[in-house]
Structures are given as C-alpha cells and as structure tokens.
Image (cartoon, one colour):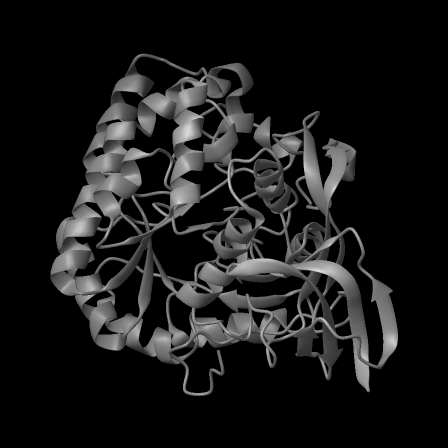
Length: 438
C-alpha cells in the first residue's frame, strides 16, 4: 500500500500531460498511472494540475550575512508557499570562495530551510585554482562577474579565460553575470560627474551595450575553453542570439514583465542589474517567444530582496541592487501559460526540469518518474489572485507586482511527500561531489 495518492488530477511534465494518479512511498514517487491503487492517504486532485516541484536555481537568501534583508527561514518559506521545493542559493554579501567555506555554510544552514537547497560558490579573479576543490566539495556552480558588483570584483577577459579553463578541466559549471567593466565604469563616472540622482541612471549606467559586449566575450571564451557556461539573467532577446550555442541562457520574470521606464518612475524599487530593457510590448513579446521556442533555457527568480525601508535609505547610487521574486516567479509563468504565451509543459521545463538537469539535481528533482523525490505541486490554473505587499512571505515585505492580478497559483506543495515545515529542507551536493546522487 502506498503512503499517499494524488488522484484525478492532470499530471504535467515537460514531456506532456495526462489525467493520472500519482502515488508516493517513502518520500519518493512510486507510481504514476491511470489505475487507482491502495493508499493510506488520498487527495482529490480533480480540476488541478499536478506538477513536479519547481527548482529555482538563482536565489539570494543572504544567510548567514545580510539577514536583515532575507534569511533561509523566510526565504525558504516564501519558496514553499509559491511552489518552489528546491533552490540553488548563493550570497554576495557572504561569498563562498573555497571548499572550507562551502562546508561551513552547508553545516550552518542545517535545520534552517523549509525546502531542499544546493549552494553556489563565487569566483575571485586570480583564484582559478579554487574551482576544482569547490566542485569536488559539492558546489552547484561557480558564480562569476565580469564587472565589479555587490562588492564582488569583476573578471577581465584574461581572468575569465583562466577560470573557464579550470572549470572545463574540473567539469564544473559557471554562472556568469555579464556586464562589461570598462563600459559600466565609464558610464558611472560620467553620470556621477553630472550630478544625476534620478532612477534613470540605472539603465544609463548598466547599459544594454555593456551587457551585450560581455555576453559576446563570455560566449567566445566558453567556446574556446570548452567550459560549461550559463549566461545569467538575460535581459533582452539579443542575449541568446549572442550566447548560444556556446552558452546556456537564463532569464528572470522581471525581463518578461517590467519596462525600462519604470526605473525613472519607481527609482530604487527598480534598481536591479541588468535593468529591465523593454521599451514596448513587442520587446516583452520577444522574450516570451524566446521562452516558448527554446532560445532561453530556463527561468529563475534572481530573488535579491531588500525591504522598503532599505530601498529608501539612501541615494539611487547607495541603495541595494535587487528585487524580491521568489513569491511570484511561478505565477508569472503560470499566468503566461494561461494567456497562451507558452504551454504548461514548457513551464515545467523552464522552472523545474531544465534547471535540475543543468545543476546536476535531475532525476532526483524536476521529475515525476518513479524514484524521484516526491516534490509535488497541486496547481489551480484558473485561480485569479492579486499580489499584495502584506501577503509577501519574503522578508522584503513588498513586490514589484503589488496590485497586479495573475491567473494560476500553487494551492499545495509537498516536499518528499509531506507539507514543507521549518527545518525540513536538506542540503543537496552538486554533481562534482563524490557522494552526489543527482
């Protein structure tokens, strides 16, 4: 007899959908089929979509550093509520730069998360020799900047090539923040000299050209080194044209929904980088089309919260970069599917299966195959709900989508067959670790 049965729902994977029953035993998927089986607990999933738990491969929960902005307790609770049962986390304010720091952080986080988590590490210029030991210690990726950001120094092309060569030798994956240092630095000098303090400095400072030049360089060095590279948070449809096929491409909901002009209108509440680039609905349409067609490989939230008080605590130059996003990313995609921009199968591919594959967590995560962890979502695709700041679970306490109505939402999430609880999340080693089970 199975422990649990989710019965009568529409089971959706990246490969298709069908009316079926999903059965769980010992915290893992035991069977998926059309025949009802004996189960100790039954859940009527009629009228709902049954999906694998989402895998958000790019979040910043700030723990154990800038916990006034976010921590694993609140960030993972927000993830669980939204339908994200696995995250890959890295924190710029407390960067992991060697194997000892990775082990220390994983030990510290034991018992602090409601969802399962893997950890990314940071690369520092001139420290390519740390890539292999970090990878063997279980880092999910090596995060690289091409310009100084968040207190992390940028890599020159020479530094980047050395890092990619070390990553290729180790079999490691690099996640690259692409903005060209000389262009961002020159723009900052000119803007500061002019006395600019308005929100419009953000797209002028972190320009489209700076992003595209860095993407082109990153793609060339990935190609010549043979490294496995992901271009992070692609802001516009030109990025995948330059990046592929040498690199995989990640994007985020802000580049599917927000406009460049909002930086002028909202100031610090739209200070993130790369900034929103869309100047028209056609620009947003092009990004959605890239998602649907496969030009963009996966979606993450890039959840990088700050409270409203923190966003208002200084000039546009001084306040934190970043947006809260873990509470709403899945619903942005569900809403897009309901509107016909992409299929529900593609949503599963973009926000569950593909990130799990890219970071070595599949088939344990991102799958409904027997033997996978029973990370399961019950999703109401017709549920209309309006985002309110007071309902945001993240410590940020606000959302760029406040007042906006989405159609589609998780109504129940299960982690290994159980409702997520504080401390239930486990550390997942990356694929380079000798003990990693994927």
